Length: 359
Image 1: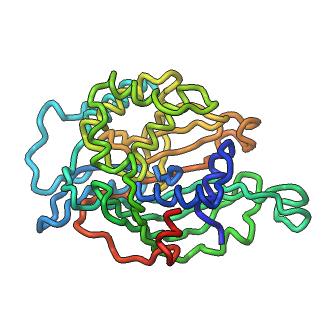
Image 2 (image 1 turned 90 degrees about the vertical axis):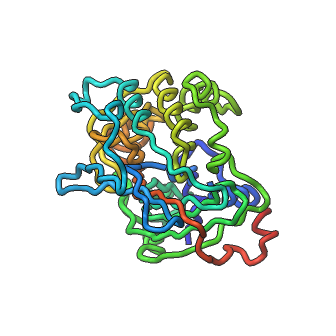
């Protein structure tokens, strides 16, 4: 059975493989993706207050037959203020990254969870997997590593202040072929199955829990400084900054003030441009904004009408660098729903000994 953490290596081949100790630490971070981090908060279409005070949900953008989504009516809300009304959408090819991200900043809303509650995020993801060469018996032939696109639907429960154990339910979907490669038999091993696991805190509070995120800067200048600060890799500074943008949004929930600042700051990252019409993992159409990294254009996908964030998408623009045909989609996500709940479901520990799990 493929370890989900090993999939990170396939999705980001420049990152060294996880050691057993690193895997334990990385699993603790699942309580905050990425998953790749991974899974990628997205697609917040509007806030609906459900009967009772225990649940507040973010409505899902419903895909029409054409693949385009529309924002649902906000239950129990007043008419939108004139300042928040979205103007008629111009030709997206003529929009700049600052225009798209500026509108995304204006669309930011906040669920205002209590510290004792949980953020529940449901998403659909697809990432490329590149396994170690298997020799003459391998699917790809002698010395060629198997490749495929791993897909799943995830629901994660994250403690708002990071003090409580979370939970993760994963529904494994059918894999898809990596461009030019057959799907190896082992890729189907988990397809059609669902598993749940507890996400122990191990006494640590991830940087991406809500109470930590609300401490981040609320100004464009301050957030930009945050994006370019911290540990550096061998990548260009703008690539690391853009990667951090996705990590702050993926499978978590960022307060509105910080999210607005993040989008405005992201527009100032060199090389960030508008792609045009793209789709997320749920086939919802939107506008892509991103930059190129290792021959792959890594876009955030925004709804073309509401400018709410839908998900992410990785598209090949340099066949030689990415080792896949131009236009191939090697990664895609869709955030389907975000809600605030009072409890996380009971789930088994992935390892019976919690001390061993926590490394």
